[in-house]
Image (cartoon, rainbow, N blue to C red):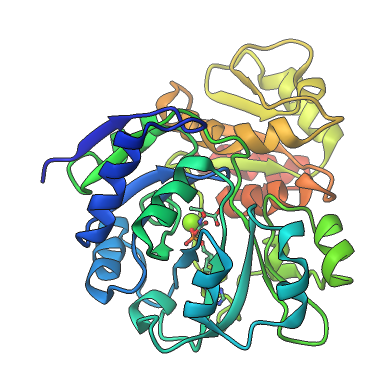
Length: 352
Ligand code: TXA
Ligand code: MG
């Protein structure tokens, strides 16, 4: 199929550009659009047939449900039942923004979108272009991250064009996403809010609205669950094709960098202060005092691993607070090896 590529300013989209997306959504087609977190691949959330096309283009397992994006609260009430009172009262404190909440689904949401669950995941994005196409189409928009399943999410339109030109109806060429990591997913139906996926909204900020959030090893990306509350947590995710080793010891990371920094085989990825010193192949993610830059740059660094000349990449661990919780979740899932000791690293070397 021929994909229309529409160049647009995501903060100040022209009415013509918005209209193109609206028409595709209303006709049942697929649109790749930026959100503040990552690019999404979207369709009319009320059309089972369109949703099935997303699963096929993304090669996504059918039981991994889609997030439905809305532009106003009236849309939420069309797709969700028994909306908790706290959402009615305090939604303006988190929406529009990078928080996805699980609700009981209303009967108009097709099972193809919810992966057969009785619930639906909903968020109101803050990106102006995203919100405008949802609002003007009058349709809730089902949109998973715009990447082939198991691959790193896409935070820049260049990668979206590379991966999906020819398989969707429209791609907005709108540059980079402002946050760069997916939304946080929570379930607030129980006594305490449960974190299903760490993401761009900090748990610290969510707790100040919803009360203390339960964070388990599945949300941290330490454990994969076979029978998960959130189906996405059981699948391989975010992975570069080449091996990525996570070094869970800062001094070991520095030692390896000193020893192998000039060995063209390895690409080192990390915070600026961790990469100081000798060596060449490096991707500086940002300052350690504010992990927002590292969050924004993480997925593109995963994609650069594959376009680089190196054989493998090496990344260090991050403190698991604020943005660091979501960063570590993505790093753990993307890594093919977790290394704690020199002998772990030796085995990694032998595996290459
Ligand atoms: O930032 C984001 O959330 C991006 C942008 C495009 O909005 N979207 C995104 O979608 O990351 P996706 O499909 O890649 O991830 C959605 C996650 C998956 O882990 C999925 O299992 C979970 O949300 N999810 C969706 N519906 C659910 C439901 N009803 N119950 C539990 N988890 C659900
Ligand atoms: Mg995804």
